[in-house]
Length: 465
Ligand code: PHE
Image (cartoon, rainbow, N blue to C red; front, side, top):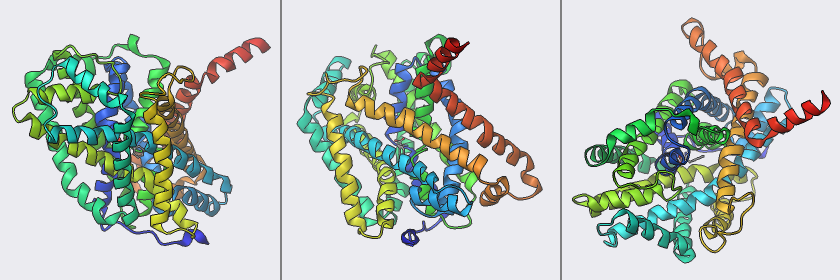
Protein backbone atom coordinates (compact mmCIF):
# COMPACT_ATOMS: atom_id res chain seq x y z
CA UNK A 1 0.00 0.00 0.00
CA UNK A 2 1.19 3.51 -0.68
CA UNK A 3 0.99 4.44 2.99
CA UNK A 4 3.77 1.98 3.70
CA UNK A 5 6.31 4.71 2.97
CA UNK A 6 8.82 4.97 5.80
CA UNK A 7 8.76 8.17 7.80
CA UNK A 8 11.63 9.34 9.98
CA UNK A 9 11.76 8.67 13.71
CA UNK A 10 12.82 11.22 16.35
CA UNK A 11 16.22 10.48 17.84
CA UNK A 12 14.77 10.38 21.34
CA UNK A 13 11.69 11.05 23.40
CA UNK A 14 13.20 14.37 24.46
CA UNK A 15 13.48 15.52 20.93
CA UNK A 16 9.80 14.75 20.49
CA UNK A 17 8.96 16.76 23.60
CA UNK A 18 11.00 19.67 22.30
CA UNK A 19 9.54 19.46 18.82
CA UNK A 20 5.99 19.17 20.12
CA UNK A 21 6.61 22.05 22.53
CA UNK A 22 8.10 23.94 19.59
CA UNK A 23 4.85 23.31 17.74
CA UNK A 24 2.68 24.31 20.68
CA UNK A 25 4.59 27.40 21.77
CA UNK A 26 4.30 30.06 19.15
CA UNK A 27 2.30 33.07 18.12
CA UNK A 28 -0.69 31.41 19.77
CA UNK A 29 0.81 32.00 23.19
CA UNK A 30 2.57 35.30 22.78
CA UNK A 31 0.53 37.10 20.14
CA UNK A 32 -2.94 35.53 20.27
CA UNK A 33 -3.48 34.72 23.93
CA UNK A 34 -3.00 38.28 25.21
CA UNK A 35 -5.07 39.84 22.48
CA UNK A 36 -8.06 37.50 22.66
CA UNK A 37 -7.95 37.79 26.44
CA UNK A 38 -8.08 41.56 26.03
CA UNK A 39 -10.95 41.34 23.56
CA UNK A 40 -12.93 39.04 25.83
CA UNK A 41 -12.66 40.93 29.06
CA UNK A 42 -9.85 39.23 31.02
CA UNK A 43 -10.23 37.04 34.12
CA UNK A 44 -13.34 35.01 33.34
CA UNK A 45 -11.98 34.25 29.90
CA UNK A 46 -8.64 33.13 31.35
CA UNK A 47 -10.44 30.83 33.77
CA UNK A 48 -12.53 29.25 31.03
CA UNK A 49 -9.37 28.92 28.96
CA UNK A 50 -7.55 27.06 31.74
CA UNK A 51 -10.52 24.73 32.22
CA UNK A 52 -10.58 24.05 28.49
CA UNK A 53 -6.88 23.17 28.54
CA UNK A 54 -7.24 20.82 31.48
CA UNK A 55 -10.54 19.11 30.77
CA UNK A 56 -10.60 19.09 27.00
CA UNK A 57 -7.18 20.00 25.62
CA UNK A 58 -5.10 17.48 27.50
CA UNK A 59 -7.40 14.50 26.80
CA UNK A 60 -7.49 15.44 23.12
CA UNK A 61 -3.70 15.77 23.06
CA UNK A 62 -3.22 12.36 24.63
CA UNK A 63 -5.58 10.77 22.09
CA UNK A 64 -4.03 12.58 19.17
CA UNK A 65 -0.48 11.55 20.00
CA UNK A 66 -1.67 8.01 20.68
CA UNK A 67 -3.44 7.74 17.32
CA UNK A 68 -0.40 9.10 15.52
CA UNK A 69 1.99 6.79 17.31
CA UNK A 70 -0.07 3.74 16.36
CA UNK A 71 -1.24 4.90 12.97
CA UNK A 72 2.33 5.81 11.96
CA UNK A 73 1.28 7.88 8.97
CA UNK A 74 -0.13 11.26 7.96
CA UNK A 75 -3.42 12.11 9.71
CA UNK A 76 -5.60 10.98 6.81
CA UNK A 77 -3.91 7.62 6.37
CA UNK A 78 -3.30 7.09 10.09
CA UNK A 79 -7.01 7.47 10.81
CA UNK A 80 -7.93 5.31 7.82
CA UNK A 81 -5.52 2.53 8.81
CA UNK A 82 -6.55 2.56 12.44
CA UNK A 83 -10.22 2.46 11.49
CA UNK A 84 -9.68 -0.44 9.11
CA UNK A 85 -7.65 -2.25 11.80
CA UNK A 86 -10.52 -1.82 14.23
CA UNK A 87 -13.04 -2.94 11.56
CA UNK A 88 -14.59 0.51 11.31
CA UNK A 89 -15.45 2.65 8.34
CA UNK A 90 -12.63 4.07 6.25
CA UNK A 91 -14.51 7.35 6.38
CA UNK A 92 -12.67 8.14 9.61
CA UNK A 93 -9.92 9.27 7.27
CA UNK A 94 -12.04 12.40 6.83
CA UNK A 95 -10.97 13.52 10.29
CA UNK A 96 -7.46 13.74 8.94
CA UNK A 97 -8.69 15.58 5.88
CA UNK A 98 -10.51 18.14 8.02
CA UNK A 99 -7.28 18.62 9.96
CA UNK A 100 -5.21 19.10 6.86
CA UNK A 101 -7.58 21.75 5.53
CA UNK A 102 -7.59 23.51 8.91
CA UNK A 103 -3.80 23.42 9.09
CA UNK A 104 -3.54 24.87 5.63
CA UNK A 105 -5.87 27.72 6.48
CA UNK A 106 -4.07 28.43 9.76
CA UNK A 107 -0.67 28.39 8.09
CA UNK A 108 -1.86 30.98 5.59
CA UNK A 109 -2.65 33.68 8.16
CA UNK A 110 -0.07 32.46 10.66
CA UNK A 111 2.62 33.29 8.16
CA UNK A 112 1.26 36.83 7.76
CA UNK A 113 1.53 37.45 11.52
CA UNK A 114 4.92 35.76 11.70
CA UNK A 115 5.87 38.18 8.94
CA UNK A 116 5.11 41.06 11.32
CA UNK A 117 7.48 39.49 13.80
CA UNK A 118 10.20 39.31 11.14
CA UNK A 119 9.50 42.91 10.21
CA UNK A 120 9.85 44.02 13.83
CA UNK A 121 13.11 42.10 14.10
CA UNK A 122 14.36 44.04 11.14
CA UNK A 123 13.17 47.39 12.55
CA UNK A 124 14.90 46.72 15.85
CA UNK A 125 18.17 45.61 14.25
CA UNK A 126 18.28 48.64 12.02
CA UNK A 127 17.47 50.98 14.88
CA UNK A 128 14.22 52.24 13.33
CA UNK A 129 12.63 51.79 16.73
CA UNK A 130 13.75 54.67 18.89
CA UNK A 131 11.87 55.41 22.05
CA UNK A 132 8.20 55.56 21.23
CA UNK A 133 5.13 56.51 23.17
CA UNK A 134 1.90 54.57 22.80
CA UNK A 135 0.54 56.76 19.99
CA UNK A 136 3.59 56.57 17.81
CA UNK A 137 3.92 52.83 18.45
CA UNK A 138 0.37 52.40 17.27
CA UNK A 139 0.91 54.58 14.25
CA UNK A 140 4.06 52.62 13.46
CA UNK A 141 2.18 49.33 13.58
CA UNK A 142 -0.61 50.69 11.41
CA UNK A 143 1.92 51.83 8.86
CA UNK A 144 3.13 48.26 8.51
CA UNK A 145 -0.34 46.75 8.13
CA UNK A 146 -1.43 49.46 5.71
CA UNK A 147 1.37 48.55 3.36
CA UNK A 148 0.35 45.44 1.42
CA UNK A 149 3.78 45.36 -0.20
CA UNK A 150 5.79 45.19 3.03
CA UNK A 151 3.49 42.57 4.44
CA UNK A 152 3.75 40.58 1.24
CA UNK A 153 7.53 40.63 1.44
CA UNK A 154 7.67 39.45 5.06
CA UNK A 155 4.94 36.86 4.58
CA UNK A 156 6.82 35.45 1.61
CA UNK A 157 10.14 35.33 3.45
CA UNK A 158 8.55 33.53 6.36
CA UNK A 159 6.91 30.88 4.16
CA UNK A 160 10.14 30.32 2.25
CA UNK A 161 12.12 29.59 5.42
CA UNK A 162 9.32 27.34 6.67
CA UNK A 163 9.30 25.41 3.41
CA UNK A 164 13.08 25.20 3.49
CA UNK A 165 12.98 23.39 6.81
CA UNK A 166 10.09 21.10 5.93
CA UNK A 167 11.70 20.32 2.60
CA UNK A 168 14.92 19.21 4.27
CA UNK A 169 13.12 16.78 6.55
CA UNK A 170 12.32 17.38 10.16
CA UNK A 171 15.31 16.11 12.00
CA UNK A 172 18.11 18.25 10.72
CA UNK A 173 17.70 21.82 11.86
CA UNK A 174 14.38 21.61 13.65
CA UNK A 175 15.86 19.52 16.40
CA UNK A 176 18.70 21.96 16.74
CA UNK A 177 16.47 25.02 16.73
CA UNK A 178 14.19 23.78 19.46
CA UNK A 179 16.98 22.40 21.63
CA UNK A 180 18.89 25.61 22.09
CA UNK A 181 16.52 28.41 21.24
CA UNK A 182 13.31 27.52 23.02
CA UNK A 183 14.94 27.72 26.46
CA UNK A 184 16.32 31.18 25.64
CA UNK A 185 12.84 32.33 24.65
CA UNK A 186 11.46 31.07 27.97
CA UNK A 187 14.17 32.94 29.86
CA UNK A 188 13.54 36.16 27.98
CA UNK A 189 9.87 35.96 28.58
CA UNK A 190 10.54 35.52 32.27
CA UNK A 191 12.82 38.55 32.17
CA UNK A 192 10.09 40.57 30.47
CA UNK A 193 7.59 39.60 33.15
CA UNK A 194 10.02 40.86 35.81
CA UNK A 195 10.55 44.07 33.89
CA UNK A 196 6.81 44.64 33.53
CA UNK A 197 6.33 43.88 37.21
CA UNK A 198 8.75 46.66 38.13
CA UNK A 199 7.91 49.25 35.51
CA UNK A 200 4.29 48.52 34.66
CA UNK A 201 1.06 48.36 36.52
CA UNK A 202 1.42 44.78 37.76
CA UNK A 203 -1.40 44.90 40.31
CA UNK A 204 -4.02 45.89 37.75
CA UNK A 205 -2.75 43.25 35.37
CA UNK A 206 -3.09 40.51 37.98
CA UNK A 207 -6.61 41.61 38.80
CA UNK A 208 -7.46 41.82 35.13
CA UNK A 209 -6.10 38.37 34.33
CA UNK A 210 -7.11 36.45 37.41
CA UNK A 211 -10.21 38.02 38.90
CA UNK A 212 -13.10 36.59 36.90
CA UNK A 213 -15.79 39.02 35.87
CA UNK A 214 -18.42 36.74 34.44
CA UNK A 215 -20.55 39.50 33.05
CA UNK A 216 -17.89 40.00 30.37
CA UNK A 217 -18.29 36.41 29.22
CA UNK A 218 -20.50 35.60 26.23
CA UNK A 219 -21.30 32.37 24.40
CA UNK A 220 -18.93 33.39 21.65
CA UNK A 221 -16.10 34.07 24.10
CA UNK A 222 -16.43 30.56 25.52
CA UNK A 223 -16.06 29.22 22.01
CA UNK A 224 -13.08 31.48 21.47
CA UNK A 225 -11.48 30.20 24.71
CA UNK A 226 -11.92 26.62 23.56
CA UNK A 227 -10.59 27.44 20.12
CA UNK A 228 -7.64 29.22 21.70
CA UNK A 229 -6.86 26.11 23.79
CA UNK A 230 -6.85 23.98 20.63
CA UNK A 231 -4.84 26.54 18.71
CA UNK A 232 -2.27 27.04 21.42
CA UNK A 233 -1.78 23.35 22.12
CA UNK A 234 -1.64 22.58 18.36
CA UNK A 235 -4.63 20.24 18.60
CA UNK A 236 -7.34 18.99 16.29
CA UNK A 237 -5.54 19.20 12.98
CA UNK A 238 -2.96 16.46 12.95
CA UNK A 239 0.26 18.27 13.92
CA UNK A 240 0.72 16.23 17.04
CA UNK A 241 -0.60 13.18 15.23
CA UNK A 242 2.14 13.36 12.64
CA UNK A 243 4.78 14.17 15.28
CA UNK A 244 3.42 11.19 17.25
CA UNK A 245 3.86 9.06 14.16
CA UNK A 246 7.58 9.73 14.32
CA UNK A 247 7.81 8.60 17.96
CA UNK A 248 10.01 5.74 19.04
CA UNK A 249 8.02 2.84 20.45
CA UNK A 250 8.67 3.17 24.18
CA UNK A 251 7.34 6.62 24.88
CA UNK A 252 5.05 7.33 27.81
CA UNK A 253 2.34 9.34 26.08
CA UNK A 254 0.46 10.71 29.06
CA UNK A 255 3.40 12.14 30.96
CA UNK A 256 4.88 13.53 27.79
CA UNK A 257 1.61 15.25 26.82
CA UNK A 258 1.24 16.73 30.29
CA UNK A 259 4.68 18.30 30.03
CA UNK A 260 3.86 19.88 26.69
CA UNK A 261 0.54 21.19 28.03
CA UNK A 262 2.13 22.71 31.12
CA UNK A 263 4.94 24.38 29.20
CA UNK A 264 2.49 25.86 26.71
CA UNK A 265 0.17 27.21 29.39
CA UNK A 266 3.01 28.75 31.38
CA UNK A 267 4.26 30.56 28.30
CA UNK A 268 0.79 31.93 27.54
CA UNK A 269 0.28 33.18 31.09
CA UNK A 270 3.75 34.72 31.14
CA UNK A 271 2.97 36.53 27.91
CA UNK A 272 -0.13 37.94 29.58
CA UNK A 273 1.88 38.98 32.62
CA UNK A 274 4.47 40.66 30.43
CA UNK A 275 1.99 42.55 28.25
CA UNK A 276 -0.86 43.74 30.47
CA UNK A 277 1.16 45.66 33.10
CA UNK A 278 2.50 47.81 30.24
CA UNK A 279 -0.96 48.12 28.69
CA UNK A 280 -2.36 49.52 31.93
CA UNK A 281 0.65 51.65 32.81
CA UNK A 282 0.51 53.45 29.47
CA UNK A 283 -3.26 53.54 29.13
CA UNK A 284 -3.22 51.35 26.01
CA UNK A 285 -6.41 49.69 24.82
CA UNK A 286 -6.55 46.05 26.08
CA UNK A 287 -9.12 45.08 23.47
CA UNK A 288 -7.35 46.61 20.47
CA UNK A 289 -6.97 43.28 18.65
CA UNK A 290 -4.13 41.65 16.72
CA UNK A 291 -1.72 44.58 17.08
CA UNK A 292 -1.67 44.45 20.88
CA UNK A 293 1.64 42.67 21.46
CA UNK A 294 3.49 44.58 18.78
CA UNK A 295 2.38 47.99 20.01
CA UNK A 296 2.87 47.20 23.69
CA UNK A 297 6.30 45.71 23.34
CA UNK A 298 7.50 48.54 21.15
CA UNK A 299 6.65 50.92 23.97
CA UNK A 300 8.28 48.64 26.55
CA UNK A 301 11.52 48.03 24.68
CA UNK A 302 11.73 51.66 23.68
CA UNK A 303 11.75 52.75 27.32
CA UNK A 304 14.21 50.09 28.45
CA UNK A 305 17.99 50.35 28.77
CA UNK A 306 19.52 48.25 25.97
CA UNK A 307 16.01 48.20 24.45
CA UNK A 308 17.31 47.88 20.92
CA UNK A 309 19.34 44.76 21.65
CA UNK A 310 16.67 43.18 23.83
CA UNK A 311 13.92 44.01 21.35
CA UNK A 312 15.91 42.46 18.54
CA UNK A 313 16.53 39.34 20.56
CA UNK A 314 12.89 39.05 21.55
CA UNK A 315 11.53 39.32 18.02
CA UNK A 316 14.16 36.93 16.71
CA UNK A 317 13.04 34.40 19.26
CA UNK A 318 9.35 35.04 18.59
CA UNK A 319 10.01 34.49 14.89
CA UNK A 320 11.75 31.23 15.69
CA UNK A 321 8.87 30.10 17.91
CA UNK A 322 6.50 30.91 15.05
CA UNK A 323 8.74 29.05 12.65
CA UNK A 324 8.80 25.82 14.70
CA UNK A 325 4.98 26.02 14.87
CA UNK A 326 4.55 26.73 11.18
CA UNK A 327 6.70 23.71 10.36
CA UNK A 328 4.24 21.55 12.25
CA UNK A 329 1.36 23.11 10.34
CA UNK A 330 2.87 22.23 6.98
CA UNK A 331 4.22 18.79 7.85
CA UNK A 332 0.90 16.86 7.95
CA UNK A 333 -0.09 17.81 4.41
CA UNK A 334 3.42 17.19 3.10
CA UNK A 335 3.55 13.76 4.76
CA UNK A 336 0.21 12.97 3.16
CA UNK A 337 1.36 14.00 -0.31
CA UNK A 338 4.51 11.91 0.17
CA UNK A 339 2.42 8.85 0.97
CA UNK A 340 0.71 9.24 -2.39
CA UNK A 341 4.05 8.01 -3.69
CA UNK A 342 4.33 10.33 -6.66
CA UNK A 343 6.00 13.39 -5.22
CA UNK A 344 9.37 14.03 -3.64
CA UNK A 345 9.47 15.81 -0.28
CA UNK A 346 10.71 18.98 -1.90
CA UNK A 347 7.93 19.04 -4.50
CA UNK A 348 5.24 18.29 -1.93
CA UNK A 349 6.57 21.09 0.25
CA UNK A 350 6.58 23.58 -2.61
CA UNK A 351 2.99 22.73 -3.52
CA UNK A 352 1.79 22.99 0.09
CA UNK A 353 3.75 26.18 0.71
CA UNK A 354 2.54 27.86 -2.49
CA UNK A 355 -1.09 27.16 -1.61
CA UNK A 356 -0.71 28.59 1.87
CA UNK A 357 1.12 31.60 0.46
CA UNK A 358 -1.73 32.41 -1.91
CA UNK A 359 -4.39 32.18 0.78
CA UNK A 360 -2.14 34.25 3.02
CA UNK A 361 -2.10 37.01 0.42
CA UNK A 362 -5.90 37.26 0.73
CA UNK A 363 -5.47 37.51 4.50
CA UNK A 364 -2.89 40.25 4.36
CA UNK A 365 -4.95 42.26 1.91
CA UNK A 366 -7.79 42.28 4.41
CA UNK A 367 -5.66 44.52 6.64
CA UNK A 368 -5.58 47.18 3.95
CA UNK A 369 -7.10 47.27 0.45
CA UNK A 370 -9.70 44.60 1.08
CA UNK A 371 -10.44 45.75 4.62
CA UNK A 372 -13.97 46.72 3.68
CA UNK A 373 -14.89 43.43 2.08
CA UNK A 374 -16.64 41.55 4.83
CA UNK A 375 -19.07 38.68 5.33
CA UNK A 376 -21.02 38.77 8.61
CA UNK A 377 -18.84 41.80 9.42
CA UNK A 378 -15.67 39.70 9.37
CA UNK A 379 -12.94 40.25 6.79
CA UNK A 380 -11.00 37.42 5.11
CA UNK A 381 -8.37 37.23 7.84
CA UNK A 382 -11.02 37.15 10.56
CA UNK A 383 -13.04 34.53 8.72
CA UNK A 384 -10.00 32.27 8.23
CA UNK A 385 -9.07 32.69 11.86
CA UNK A 386 -12.56 32.05 13.20
CA UNK A 387 -13.40 29.16 10.88
CA UNK A 388 -10.15 27.29 11.45
CA UNK A 389 -9.57 28.02 15.10
CA UNK A 390 -13.03 28.17 16.57
CA UNK A 391 -14.86 25.67 14.36
CA UNK A 392 -12.53 23.25 12.56
CA UNK A 393 -10.03 22.56 15.35
CA UNK A 394 -12.68 21.82 18.00
CA UNK A 395 -14.63 19.71 15.48
CA UNK A 396 -11.48 17.72 14.65
CA UNK A 397 -10.76 17.32 18.36
CA UNK A 398 -14.31 16.14 19.00
CA UNK A 399 -14.01 13.45 16.33
CA UNK A 400 -10.62 12.39 17.71
CA UNK A 401 -11.94 11.85 21.23
CA UNK A 402 -15.10 10.17 19.93
CA UNK A 403 -13.00 7.77 17.89
CA UNK A 404 -10.60 7.04 20.75
CA UNK A 405 -13.21 6.87 23.47
CA UNK A 406 -16.18 5.24 21.79
CA UNK A 407 -15.02 3.48 18.64
CA UNK A 408 -11.78 1.95 19.86
CA UNK A 409 -12.07 -0.72 22.53
CA UNK A 410 -11.06 0.71 25.91
CA UNK A 411 -8.58 -2.12 26.41
CA UNK A 412 -6.90 -1.41 23.12
CA UNK A 413 -6.69 2.30 23.82
CA UNK A 414 -5.31 1.76 27.32
CA UNK A 415 -2.77 -0.71 26.01
CA UNK A 416 -1.68 1.79 23.36
CA UNK A 417 -1.25 4.36 26.07
CA UNK A 418 0.94 1.94 27.99
CA UNK A 419 -1.49 1.83 30.89
CA UNK A 420 -1.39 -1.49 32.63
CA UNK A 421 -2.67 -3.21 35.72
CA UNK A 422 -3.33 -1.81 39.14
CA UNK A 423 -1.22 1.27 39.80
CA UNK A 424 -3.04 3.07 37.03
CA UNK A 425 -6.58 2.17 38.00
CA UNK A 426 -7.71 5.53 39.27
CA UNK A 427 -5.84 7.54 36.67
CA UNK A 428 -7.15 5.30 33.90
CA UNK A 429 -10.70 5.84 35.15
CA UNK A 430 -10.28 9.60 35.24
CA UNK A 431 -8.82 9.58 31.76
CA UNK A 432 -11.60 7.40 30.39
CA UNK A 433 -14.20 9.71 31.94
CA UNK A 434 -12.53 12.75 30.41
CA UNK A 435 -12.13 11.21 26.96
CA UNK A 436 -15.53 9.54 26.79
CA UNK A 437 -17.74 12.09 28.46
CA UNK A 438 -16.31 15.41 29.57
CA UNK A 439 -14.30 16.37 26.49
CA UNK A 440 -16.91 15.41 23.86
CA UNK A 441 -19.78 16.98 25.78
CA UNK A 442 -17.79 20.14 26.42
CA UNK A 443 -16.78 20.59 22.79
CA UNK A 444 -20.18 19.64 21.43
CA UNK A 445 -21.99 22.05 23.74
CA UNK A 446 -19.77 24.94 22.77
CA UNK A 447 -19.95 24.17 19.06
CA UNK A 448 -23.73 23.87 19.07
CA UNK A 449 -24.08 27.07 21.02
CA UNK A 450 -21.79 29.07 18.79
CA UNK A 451 -23.22 27.88 15.53
CA UNK A 452 -26.67 28.95 16.69
CA UNK A 453 -27.92 25.36 16.29
CA UNK A 454 -29.30 25.45 19.81
CA UNK A 455 -31.47 28.46 19.02
CA UNK A 456 -32.64 26.89 15.76
CA UNK A 457 -33.34 23.64 17.65
CA UNK A 458 -35.33 25.48 20.30
CA UNK A 459 -37.36 27.26 17.64
CA UNK A 460 -38.21 24.00 15.90
CA UNK A 461 -39.03 22.46 19.25
CA UNK A 462 -41.35 25.32 20.15
CA UNK A 463 -43.00 25.20 16.72
CA UNK A 464 -43.76 21.53 17.07
CA UNK A 465 -44.96 21.52 20.64
N1 PHE B 1 0.26 26.08 18.59
C1 PHE B 1 0.78 27.02 17.67
C2 PHE B 1 0.91 28.36 18.39
O1 PHE B 1 0.54 28.49 19.52
C3 PHE B 1 -0.05 27.15 16.43
C4 PHE B 1 -0.45 25.84 15.84
C5 PHE B 1 -1.78 25.50 15.77
C6 PHE B 1 0.52 24.94 15.40
C7 PHE B 1 -2.18 24.27 15.29
C8 PHE B 1 0.13 23.71 14.91
C9 PHE B 1 -1.20 23.36 14.87
O2 PHE B 1 1.37 29.30 17.83
